[in-house]
Image 1 (cartoon, rainbow, N blue to C red):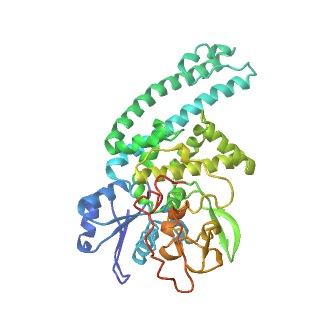
Image 2: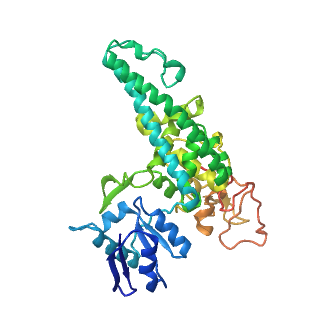
Image 3: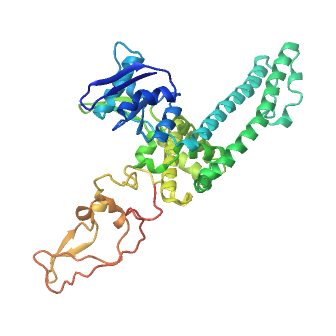
Length: 425
């Protein structure tokens, strides 16, 4: 591997190739360990270096390979040039960073991803059996051969001995995969209970998220607190599209490969399973299908499920179906999309209560704002979601002494962040 060390002034102190092993690396960086920060591109070989830096007390930064390719792309590219450019990006504070998975969860996460790979291979074998049956224009098998009890006599449907052998091999591999995957899932589930049993118990409360999807979400998210906003989590899970704009003109979307593909798959699967035996969910999807096509409606549902999981894990609460459906229309239930979006709707800005100009006035000022947003900021926007228990008097010209200005009690419960409790969509 190539190692490049820069000083604070940008001078190259070390730039050479060496064996990718702990001893040569520690020996090379020994004279420069004071204030040293190690950065590496997130390829498949960074685990040992991250663990070594953690053991040696060296700060470690993992660079996002796809983002760095867009930044330091040049006419010539090799390991020597890339190592220097990574050092320069780190020195300038421009290195796009990726998440360093905790060492204790890393191996189980890789095993779970391998399980997904094996399951897709099993699905290919099942599809091969159905396609071969259609290729020879035979009647439909009728039963799902995914179940072991329905595989008897499937190979005998074909007259050619070679085709029978092909189907027998496919069915034998499926049978072996079933036993292998069952043992693999049991091992992962046992390990996951030691890592984060509480999160593992919360995720299945969402309709459509079962044992396997809960494990995928647990190990791909790791710690929900690393996403300051729900928008960050939705972007990381590939549940939203990023627009390309310049001078006020939109040129489409980009960044489809930015984010976690495993989370995208998990929420897409959950959106389909969410609709099974779930009448409120089916009505919600039907409402979206009137405005969008079915594919877009499922994508919206996957996005909503992602937002629900973000809320649940940050507040340690179970899923509540009564709070999940959103009213249709523009700016519905806004701005619950985040905690820090500025601005307010006209409905909240202007209440329909008329208040007098003063205690002795004969006319009313008309609708005035009872919103605390202009005074206390948008983080407490939900304080006035409902009508308050009493009217707040306003006065102009200067108020009469009769106005006591007593504080009025609020009639809602709130979370620590100022959001109304359990109102998360």
